[in-house]
Image 1: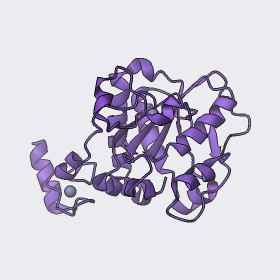
Image 2: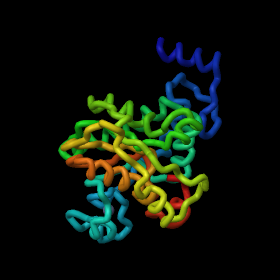
Image 3: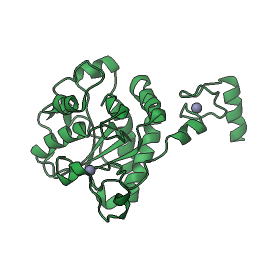
Image 4: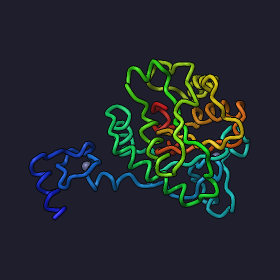
Length: 255
Ligand SMILES: [Zn+2]
Ligand SMILES: [Zn+2]
């Protein structure tokens, strides 16, 4: 009966898949066809135990606690980071639907994937609050919403944690330039975030959420701000991960 009703809906209101334009055959909250969703495959192991960077070295699979070069040098201020999928061509299109077209059900679909990561190792993800990486007020006004909210809000609901989008603010705008070099990424986010007036993060375990992890500079800057304000632990989850680690084409996308 339900199938018949869905088929009728798709007959009456045929909607194309927002990625490949194929007509959707069943009514779904997500305007993306099954085939396209199936291309958004999760990252494959092994990953850096700290920042979640996929490690290409064949040796990494044999080491019990593999760490990438950056984490061995302890450069990140966050305690842990993981991502759902590589930032490949399919994911670039999916993220842009979230970022520029406010496809909210897709945010919930991503939140479900991130909740699965948490469920896989719950002891690592104990948190008091879920905090989206904020946009600068000017950017927020232009776009009308923060794409990180579209992921973090349903994730907080799924994890039964408070959603606290007001804790962090971005005080320094991102340069208008679309593509930033690896060095510029670190430079533009340095000191770009602050704790909102009178907000308290003392001793808190914070779960930070963003759409894409490119160099890790953004999560790092947010984590540094939170830690300086007294947060006990900061862990980050992003939907996508630039697998080249900031080099090559993946590193050229906006963070
Ligand atoms: Zn499709
Ligand atoms: Zn690492």
